[in-house]
Image (tube, rainbow, N blue to C red):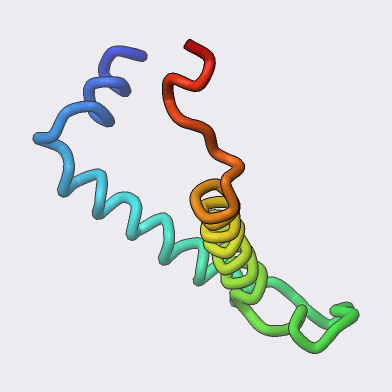
Length: 84
């Protein structure tokens, strides 16, 4: 059972099928977000469908760029052979 799952996600022959499955799941999540009742939202943006996903994605991308900037430009990252 586990071998078939690992083979499915690790084999390049199933790449288009995996991509279609991924897109299907994304569409189902977006459709499900429109079915949520939002009459008890505290803020205006909480009532917008998909706001949490957009906010999470932008926050993640911003976190990656800030950490790359701190590591490369500010000098927090060390050379690979620093401890040798």
